[in-house]
Amino acid sequence: IPNLEDRGSLDFVDAILMEIQRWRPVVPGGIAHRSREDDIYKGIFIPKGTMIIPNTIGILYNREEFPEPEVFNPYRFLTSKGNEYTLRKGVHNPLDTAFGYGPRICPGRHFATSWLWLAIATILTVFDISPEVDAAGNDILPDLEYVPVVVRYIFRVSN
Image 1 (cartoon, rainbow, N blue to C red):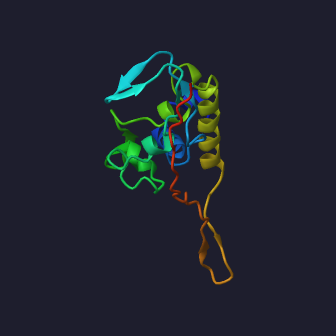
Image 2 (cartoon, rainbow, N blue to C red):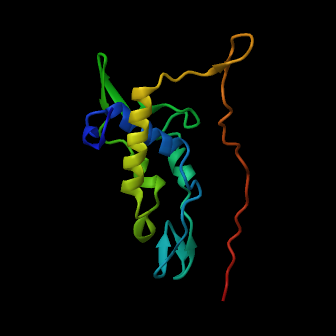
């Protein structure tokens, strides 16, 4: 049975963990921050005290960086040489995004990712996983689709 000492030698488990956090982040809307000082970003003035909410799902579903983002595909983080897979270098690691940013980053992120990694590695070691089948022998696949919703955010100016 795998243990945390195996982390770093089971790249496919790392890729699954990265893809889980990219595909279904815990906080898709991000954790709110407040600007500490006046700032200008891409020509837009942001006054001190403005609430800033990162669009985590927008970052992790960026089609230029993650083609077909709605598809669960851990291989997007791997490179292969024959039958051997290793983690690709230089890819955006969703674990750097899924747990927040800056001073509000989740303080338990390392604990959480370690236990998620261990759970994934253990489940893959001790179980054969396959879809349930209906009476006709057809696979019963879960509907895990995010439904896009159009929302309007209107900036409120307060005095």
